[in-house]
Length: 59
Image: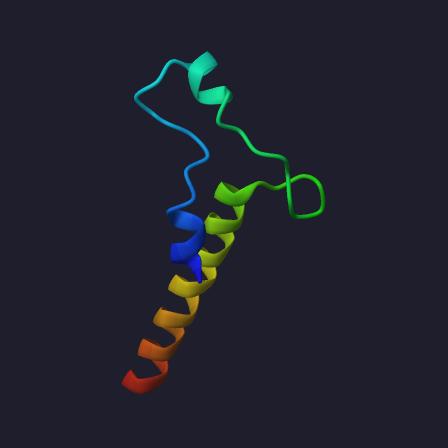
């Protein structure tokens, strides 16, 4: 699920800030977070559960 948000281009690091700002989308989650923020949340949750599962099987 995080891959869908990862490949959604909401900015370009190679562009100038003004040009990159033109790619911004409306905030979708709670009218505050955009797709890039949602990707951060989902990837953090994915890493947490991956390490939780790894820790569970090691004990």
